[in-house]
Length: 104
Image 1 (tube, rainbow, N blue to C red):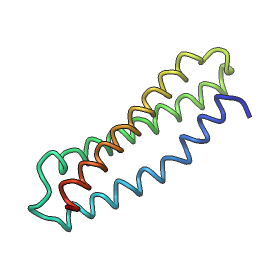
Image 2: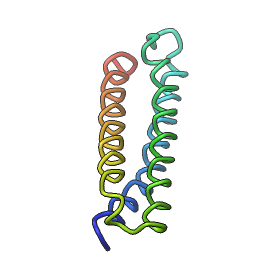
Image 3: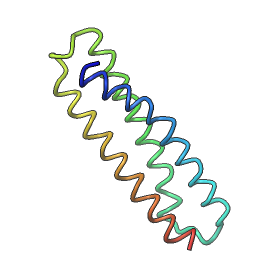
Image 4: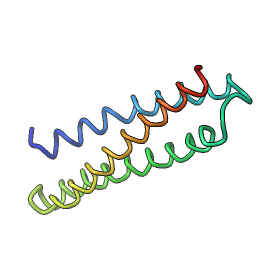
C-alpha cells in the first residue's frame, strides 16, 4: 500500500470509531441532563458536522486518486490529513471536557 492508500484506509477505519465515541459521549450528556454545560451540548453537533466533512474530504480524495493518480493529489492529501488530525484533536478536547464536567 502507498502512503495515500494507507491514510485513506486508516481514515475510513476511524469513521466508525469516532462516530461511536461521539454517540457514547452524547448519551453521557443526555444522562447528565442539567449537569452538562452549554458548550458541551453545542460541541456534539459541531463535531458531528466536522466528522461528516472529514468523511467527504477523504472520499473525494480517494475518488480523485482513482481518477488522476497519486502524484496529482499530494496537496489534497495533505489538506485532508490536516483536517483529519484537527478533528481528532477536537474530539480529544471534547472528551476531556465531558470527563471534567459531566463525569465529575
